[in-house]
Length: 371
RNA sequence: GGACAGGUGGGUGAGUGGUUAAAGCCAACAGACUGUAAAUCUGUCCCUCCUUGCGAGGUACGAAGGUUCGAAUCCUUCCCUGUCCA
Image 1 (tube, rainbow, N blue to C red):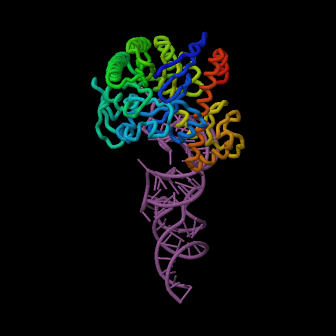
Image 2 (image 1 turned 135 degrees about the horizontal axis):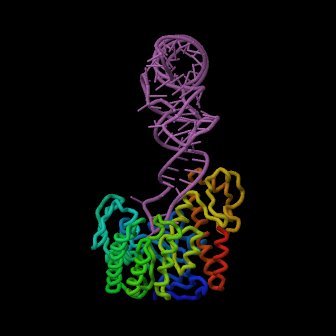
Image 3 (image 1 turned 45 degrees about the horizontal axis):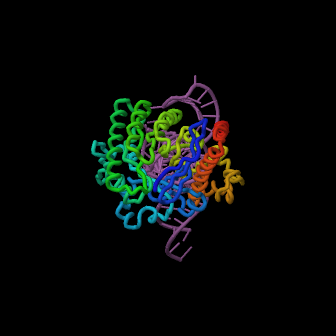
């Protein structure tokens, strides 16, 4: 049975520690979920994700996998877990974010999103119901409702209409799921939208809570707004969400932002930053960002992060990593991604530990002081 | 020795009389990246100066001369490289 077990709550901040029980294993929260859009976390093997990083849950994307290879193919091959050899939990995004990022290729109607494939221009329609069907075919453990990720800035009226549609879509998706698919082993998360308007966020959250979902997401953040505003939106939303359900902020954040979201009652996060920035030569360390391509690392014998225990830091110098980057070697991407994801997961493990032993306020203060 | 072809900024390689300090690509250097249309994208990339501007000078297309108002582009000589023939 899919359920969330709340283990500890920080009395001072809103931070919580818990366990998300899924059909594909337990996920200790707060958790960071590596993004594996096309049934692979770019640059890294599932084996390393499993053994080296001990990731418990990763993301897949409905939009991408629907277009290629297609849900039928994935289902025929035993579902996403079997297809990509990932035995642990998988959360699938609905394609709502692509509605936002592929805005030149789509048209939104009440029925759903009419869009053209970025691969070959073929027209497709995503509806709240169809995206659930696709995610079921993929075999997802945590499915996301189809939502509209609103661009920023957005006027109140437009944001309001869009958010109301997202709520209607969430109702349809949930109803469809309960009617056709729900066996208690997986979850569908509605997504709170509302742009940067507190009243819209609140109204949206309140309406979505009525759906009695197994978890809730906060979407539409980190779309170009100032950082403090993102946190503010999370902060006004989480108290309205059920205490006993996991809360997932979609698409965040920088390493130093993770503790901030947790302090506001967030249990789950995902972001492409650790993997994408890794490929682009940006490595996250306890001392901040290291742009490994810089000339200053040319002869640097030190590991990327002296305090890091990852395979990359245990075995390779900055000079070597820089060399691989400059040479365009794909091994660089692998080593860099391994390190960055390890950094993110380490942060989350530290956070969780701090909450469990009742020291989260201290952890948060130290984290802020380190910036 | 002879016949062709050719020598352009770190590398390639456009450019055959005038918005050319010289396209594009690569390298180098710096920056960006937040539910991944990303192994991507942006900027800088001869020197000096400043009031940092589609600014002002100075150098520059193998070398030296020449033609011309004006030459990387045309002419002469020289040097060098490649291919072929002796």
